[in-house]
Length: 344
Image 1 (cartoon, one colour):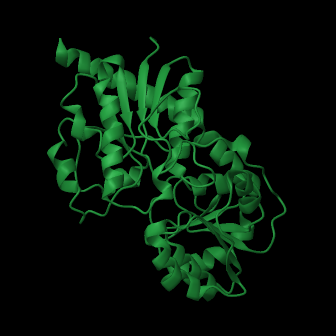
Image 2: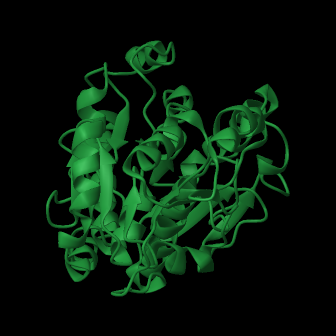
């Protein structure tokens, strides 16, 4: 197959990859570096403090994580996207990673655009009105079947590409300690409060790790900090190198989301997730999918039944970077072919 000229357009909240935090930026980095490795000509549009083997075109010197979230962040992200679309004729495909942003530009260029939705807003959010406007011509990739199913908009051109991870960064630990962990960005939608209340009800020790965004500091002070005690501890933000020991030392990971699930299982720590039909977890073998608090409490009691080696094998066989990028490559060639037919 012909090698492609590919633009990867990242949000500017964090550098690519981010240190310790920023699962989305880690995924963008994995995709970018693997595409470079495969011989594609890749250009990454991100902040200047990013690290990549691709050509880097920065819209600003440092990522926006150093300042409180504000409308200004949107202007900088629009500015960065405009960089990519101004150069659209230099690319065979443009891959955008901030929800609907790429769709706002796609009708002004001839180059096909793929949009990956890394996080899906609730159906009540007004942003879905924008998605609806573009539903017939947007190319959209969800990261999970459940995400696609929960979308209030049915798109003409959509795919599901599960995230992948590099398990070589995570060491298998077969001798965990007697505590559970939660990890992630400290925001209400990451289920940190639910994890704390569940741990208290189960009487287990729970270690919490993650960054506190500037705009969530009030939430942490009022909702999370008062719940901390000798068994429920917040240990701060961890570096990427510290994550492996953090996950691996735990009996299990409680209510993880996104990449945290894969990274935890790669270290042998089974996960307990809250929801239904979650495909990234093999319930009963690599952890448990619980639909309510009663099932969660039962899962905590049964966590030692999980073979930690099975957790790592599951990630290795189903959620590798190579498998993820294989799927994105297929989509690139497909939408390029469709676009060629439309324009000739």
